[in-house]
Image (cartoon, rainbow, N blue to C red; front, top):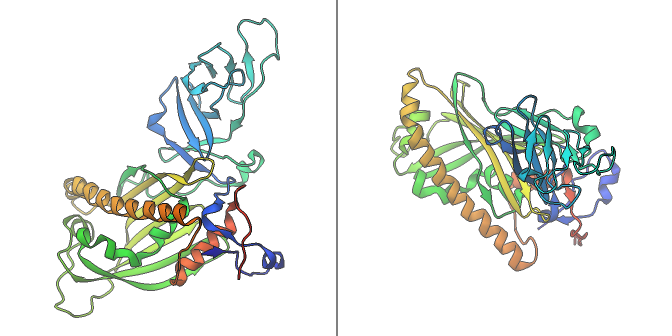
Length: 367
């Protein structure tokens, strides 16, 4: 299925060529998480990646974490294997030292200044237990805000972290979460439920879809009942809207929020799909799931392991599906998806409009 940017007030978009969506890279001019804060210890370096770019995260004993290209300018070995000393990282091979700006400040066996070449430095920030880098134009970093991340730090919520890797293009993940019509896939975990589309909102850089769910058969999972309350058997009658599920892609991030019938937020999921590999056909997911604590908070603590097992099983079913989609794309030599749901069509247009065609992408016929 070919994707092109929809017509809008910018007449230039009318002539924008169509590309295979799986050949459209993430726009690098946003903040992307590349590691959990607890993984980068004081006085240590940590190896991370964004797309095909190796990143060294360095946390000095004092001062904030910083990010450099994970290749020494001398022999290209990983700086993340080096020694953190003061505010600098020393390459493990010859001891070349680089500061947080990427400048080579010491070549220990040459007693001269300005001998070693610098390495690339990335704007780097830390928020909500995540370390973000700005892989695009560093001059834009200050003007692009960090995202709001679930309910981290809110004492009324309990938050779970997850960060699986998937063998698929990031766009498959946006589509999977946005399209709640795939609940048939999860029938063994959730019983027989049907998504009911309630409406949408969209703008230049976002799309939101809202759903409720009607249970058609099967028992309600324990973890679901502990979080949202017991959904009673209505003996065939139409189930009222008890919760509203809102899925929103605000490029390049995605959220899922659940509000109860009184409008209170009871679950808040934030996720970012960070591309891996030069072709961006792999994805590192960083997600935070915040659940509202009930009046008796210990009940959520008791349910927490069951919730973890439940969400893991759901995700593993999604993982298998999206990786099968990616496999089909490879075998067929392109995107042959036939999409009929208007929300997903709009989402694909958004991802195409905001992303960047990669070097392998070729304009294809719209006919």
